[in-house]
Length: 605
Image (cartoon, rainbow, N blue to C red):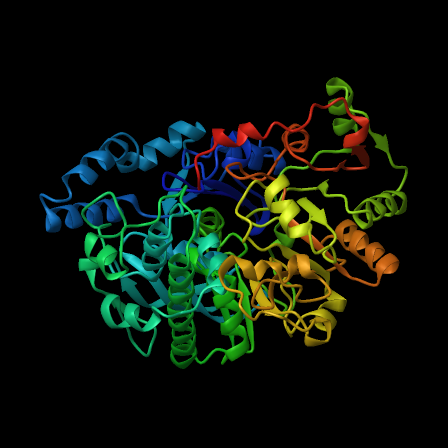
């Protein structure tokens, strides 16, 4: 039984292939087109999935599953436009061409794009999220929470999963949405909607939640069960092309920050405030899900489930014993969810869960390239590189480079599915180096200096370095650095971004200003090579942690191919590039100094 799942035409288009219920391949279209958050039809991602699964043509598939129901979504758009007419006319005119050409004829469009004549099924948007959260999880039974901007009508759902079935029990409907509330403040603080939410979360610890009460009093009515109602007078997303209205601008003392303007204390305090409100809503939803379902485990998906600070609070404060979060929690994961919903729910495919291991295959579901392919590429490009004879030689050399302060591009095995680099397409550094965060942000990633980096830690050492009891294999939980690793802080007189100057722990490059870290726990069985590299670093330094950030620069997707990786290496201040068994040092290459003017090619995001 071969099922292809597809998500497309909003943002983060993706494809996923299941064979007899097992995830064989999954990838976002952006990785192939090099267009960040590509929303077009995932033709390249689908072609890759078919190749990886040995499927000769799309007509060898049994089912194609699409991640939402376009007709229902169109109904919601029309009702919204009519309700706000004539104010919504510009937005209506902007949206209609794509709907009339593509989205309304999705069945025919899928068949045409894939050259496919078989069965096509459609799942509801939040059914796809729920399926992506529960079916790959390690749990036989679980409560389900999905929270995002909006699907068809639903903006959040509460459900229950058991065996090979899920049930949606309660929903919050548009225009009331926790995801849209957070995105509205992402827009107001000068970041790009649907990509800048990470920045807002990262900025929050620099501020104080002085506006949290104001937000709850004026903007959102947050109920005890986590449901909410927005005061729509403060928003413009129903009728206009902006997220916020002038009334919200007046409430916060002025217009939204321009993307190129300096970040002020106002933005920091707003970030802290909306983060606090969001965490309160998430924890209330979780408690209510426990009351309604009686389950001891919880699974999460939807864009808001990428808020790892909120996830950490849910885990710490209970009442759930364990929590599992879909690593591709946003719309890309909808492709996976649609395929799994079709297999289990529609076709009654069997499902087993052992309570310990998920079915996500460490989310290493994308393309891979062997040493011979890489060697041919390096020869064609005239790259000076050394092929290491075995794993121990490779990790030994790379460890020495990291210890010497090098920033290392690490390209290995299958590409990750989801927004996080998990040790296959990563940029690595020494977490003990107090300058590493600034070096990586300014000279490698070309992004704001306040952005924190994540630690990848040996799973067996995680509890010695971080205050966490659960595993975090997908970098979706935040925990405090263990107090035994913290240093006395002198913060008197410091505020805002000046807090960056404080040395907070033995691993300052991955310790955020509030003493927390968004960590990845690395298990030997999930990624043996990456685990061995960290283990070798630990053997030489006594530190079982590496800085791990995604292998890309601002404005570009994570690299997919050796060509992508080399281009990123050549255009930045990266010191060392590791492609499979091949190691290339910048000093050995005939490269001009990085031309930083190329950053102007990318609009601020």
